[in-house]
Every structure is written in structure tokens, then in C-alpha cells.
Length: 114
Length: 114
Image (cartoon, rainbow over all chains, first blue to last red; front, side):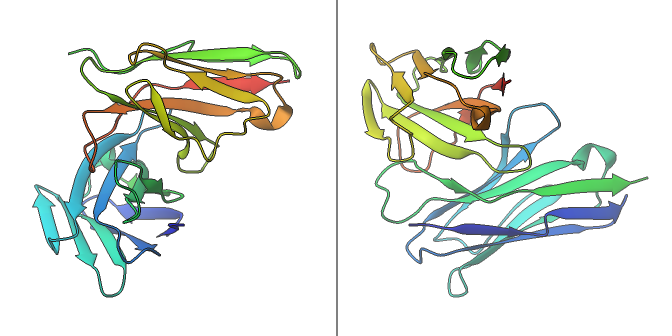
């Protein structure tokens, strides 16, 4: 089955700097890649997603890139702010799934240093 | 628009006792998911419903876990009997249709088994 690996598990960056979180997936037919943000004690919330027919997507300070050949996708946060501190999860929808099942990575705890 | 509602938010029980969690998805969302989230990990799918049909329950430990969504709206997840290792956050999510649509998560139920 699909396996999603995420790294780093923790990341600390200076406020204003950029943060990059990387994920790899095992099923080459995977076709949908969402990213979720989970603040402490809160529910995961979708922040951006990308489909396999697109190589890059941007939404203000957040961007996601997808490399299908390498089976690799990344989240980029620019000009980080204190409110970006949270746990971020990547996910992938396997190609064998005809519906909306997604497999989550293990998460990256991002801390923004003032 | 009301989000996904879960109750209770917290539950503390002794091992071998039964416990039940309730979820009411966003109105009109026909797909409902139950996830288990251990501390520091990503959500792991337990069961997925399309309307009232359980279409993916391969990760549900059926010896002690059961779920139902009788009318295709709200759902109940039950554990009987609970074990120490069941301590985790149980998240419910819903989405409209299938095919990679955004999953909206509830606040979760934090279960502690003593």
C-alpha cells in the first residue's frame, strides 16, 4: 500500500525566514497531495493541496511543489510568522483508491523563533 | 456553516470498560471518516463511510472496535473492551463526494484508558 514519509520531524526557523518540509510517497499513481496544519490541541485544517497534473501551486506565503518522477513533494513557507508555529502533515491519495482515502505523513513540528 | 461536531471532547475510562464516540458531519457531506491519532503522529484511517456504507474498514480492529452510520448522517465509533493502548485522539472528518475533495476534521475526542 501507499507509504508517505515526511521530514524533518522538527524544524525551528527564525521569524521572517523560510521553512521547507519534504515528503516522499511510494505509489507512483498517487494523484492528490494535501497539506494540513494542526495547532496544539486543535483539529487538522487544510492549508493547500496539489493534484498530479500540476507541478507547483502557490497561495500567498505558502507554496507546494510536486516532482512526480522522484515521487516527492514539498511545502514552502516564506516570511514565517509566529502564527505559523504548528504541526504540519503531508498526505497522498493512492492511485488504487477510487475515492477520497488519503495517507498521512508523520508530521513536522515547526517552531518560529522571535 | 457548522463544522464537524464530535462528543465527548475528553473521556477517561478504566481498561476493559466500553466507550463510544459520536460524530455529526457537515450537512450534505456524504463521506465520513474515523481516524486515530497517536501523540506526535499523523492521523490513521480506521473506517470510511460513503453514505451509510462502510467502504473501507481494513484498518479497524474488528475484535474490539465497531462503527455505525445507520442513516448516512451521524456516526458512532465504539470500543469494547478498551485497552491501555487505545489511549489516543479519535478524529472524525467529512467530505463532500469523493475524488480528493477536502476533508474537514472535527475537534476530536481525547481518550485516556487507565
